Length: 80
Image (cartoon, rainbow, N blue to C red; front, side, top):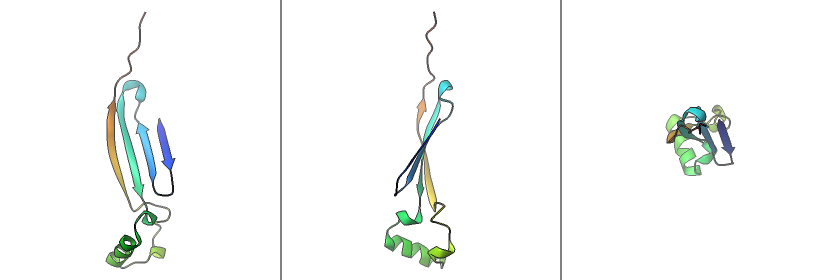
């Protein structure tokens, strides 16, 4: 099961890998150019000697952080 939450600041995506067999829940936070402060945007553009118009950072993230948040236990099934 995959859940995506989007807001103007960032996208948070949670993914459970096969929750019926147990698995890992992970979260991904994408960082967009618009998420940076004006000072950080200016610094990034200066370091790479580019302009924001030359990049597609309005559509694609400039980076992301992935983290496994927990291991889901294997579900128990009651037997008769």
